[in-house]
Image (cartoon, rainbow, N blue to C red; front, top):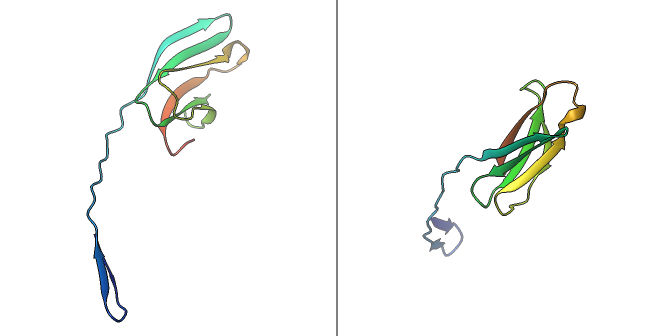
Length: 99
């Protein structure tokens, strides 16, 4: 990268740098349990990004139910699914940006 000023005298500076972009690995859901009206699962993925658990009753409109803050992976999440009168769909989203 070269930066130049058009003043008197003309000044410039050069700085080299490397940018490394790691591919984002997909997050996963495992150890799904449904006991006594509680639904739970374990989320996994690469350490570093935040993760959001989102819920939806129609697969279009989603609400964020839980956000981690760069936790040690894996993380566990559960909800009282026994009181839901309509089916719920859940997903884990990696970020940022979140939600």
